[in-house]
Length: 89
Image (cartoon, rainbow, N blue to C red):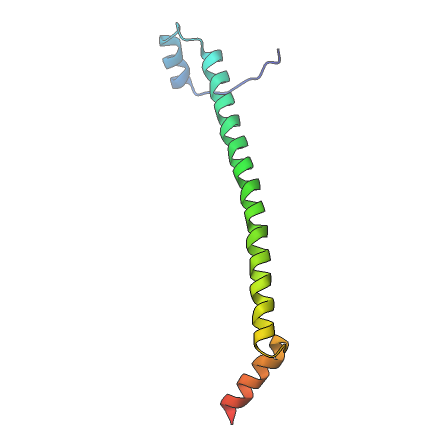
């Protein structure tokens, strides 16, 4: 089994020594596993969120195309130019 080293301050080490009946290696190992599980869960949720974003992008694209068809099939630049010209006359 691999070994890792962790630096702690003297006060923390003193407190750990006072509680010498605790298996500190096991405490640290459990905490590392807990943090890894939390991070993997966040990663999975992030990947699922990205999938949902593609659905929203598709829906927005469809709405945009419907808007395009409803306003005479003109490009947005043409429509904006027409609106500006009408307001300046």
